[in-house]
Length: 602
Image 1 (cartoon, rainbow, N blue to C red):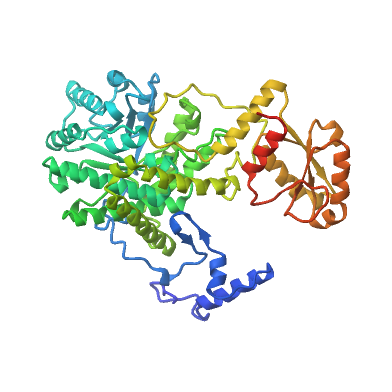
Image 2 (cartoon, rainbow, N blue to C red):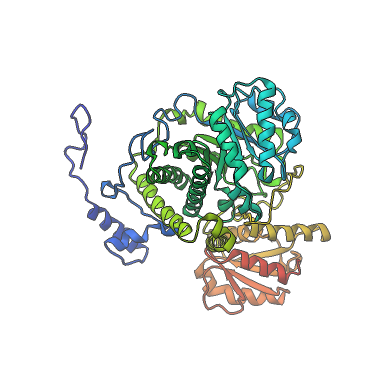
């Protein structure tokens, strides 16, 4: 139905409203041209995209796809934001992560746009004894400090509280988080921690430092272990509920206990899924608070970090694009604080340039793009509202299975959660291997001649619990084999692209083949004869029509010239002399690994 503007003038008044059925018939016609005879809802389903957690993105959303009322910003169920004013006043909190002491780095961040600090202390970070040095010159009543110290949390918290006292910071003015997360630590290391000291810290902070939270509900361990968005949300809910139980048993009221929690989530380059995830997280936590009898305490405080899983080591400059999209999604999704990981995060300690780009990403989105001036800009979109609702349902279902099995600690110790996450990652790994989920600069458009970006090694993070995965790991292993071969022999493994016919007939498939083999560190040779190429294998590249006439003879000629293995770029068909095929949707990792094996690249 056409909605009239305020002045009553409808520019579409003389045009009838299009119906959903009319649109479906148009879709049927397009699909018919591509050889697919489907009709009605089946035509719409053919254009749908399957996501993780059983979700599907449809090609068209209308008013009939409306989701439950998301409420208003600052009011339950907090889907549209935890505060009525959102981030319109000053934008979101720009939080920079520091895991090592670098001369002047902390102050440089604070002087150039960063508004809070995230300090990693103890194992895998800055020694707790050096916390004072890290905070030299920092006005602690102005810059919130968030700690992450694992098993050293108690000592780190005491050190920070002592620092507040030594510098004369007003206890009622300081903001931040002491970072206690015993279940997150157990997920990372497999080692449980006693909750009693953290409950005592929470009670102390609630009485003396009202702006200082004690506990972080960190969902990154589950995201970094390969979990889906619903699994990340479900695990965070189970963690938050476990902490509420512990804190209330220690004597805090539900409202006071909820005020001690801050939730940490990952933002990926899938902008709509990230937006929906943050909105769904607030709705879910509001439901928990409601069930606990404290609906007014249901406004979840969110710290969002650009995903470490999506960061690549090859062509790391593309990471700037990934983190920009992820930061945009975090801001639009209503994050209270955002940490942009530097583009060289996967390579080691970031340099000053990488830290500057990271903090400026938020600055540009807030100050130049004015992204924070509209509260919940995605709200009202039928697609976003529907995706938020469906993701919340999937996450709630996963949360209930955790509670049914005894809570998060129980599923961590039984291995059930590890198995669930591993199953999800195995399915995603298949999509990565087949390049259904492309990685620019790695699985698509790799550059073998790129100069490696080198950084000082970062401290080893805690380990022993859930694994840490990366999207590029399978291709990184292949490229590492190629690099070792280059170092040992002075040349990369090569493959000859045998093009047949005119450029119009072979260019598309020769480009495809060149990209595919470079993803595994195999250098394509496109000029000259096979005998002079230095290659032991070849790929035929052309159109299906040319293959029908010339593929068999060309394969025979290549074998006579010494080719041990002949590929054909195209769908499998009956051609003589062809050993295997490469095509869109083939298992690129399997093809490349087998190719390197045959070439003797260990």
